Image 1 (tube, rainbow, N blue to C red):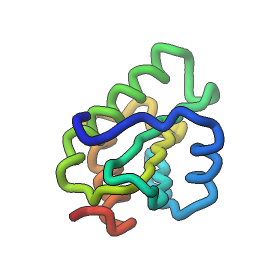
Image 2 (cartoon, helix red, strand yellow; image 1 turned 135 degrees about the vertical axis):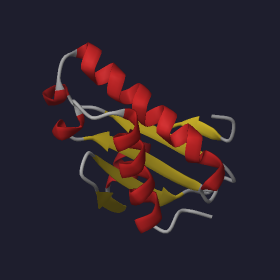
Image 3 (spheres, rainbow, N blue to C red; image 1 turned 60 degrees about the horizontal axis):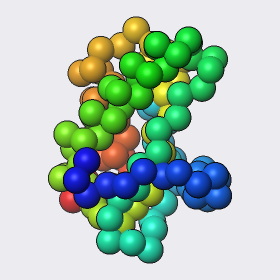
Image 4 (cartoon, rainbow, N blue to C red; image 1 turned 180 degrees about the horizontal axis):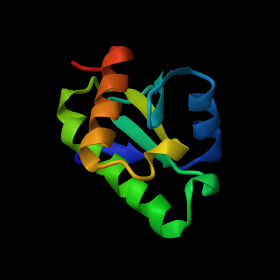
Length: 110
């Protein structure tokens, strides 16, 4: 992810959670305008989704989905992508389509 940094601070996560969101079939995407010229990404998969192997797999799928559409997105936003329970058995293509649809609905495609 060449033009994106990670969201790391709890206060940044809380700020983004209070902003606009879109609930998809397998993910929830939160977004908020930031004061930088680049995007920042946070990924969340709760313990109720599954054990560590399952959670890490979902994070890898979501990170790769974002990376492939990174060039199409507007700059200057913070994103948090949260995996829902029903994302556990889904394929990469399904996760990617869900995130792409959410980004389109949030008017983030450039």
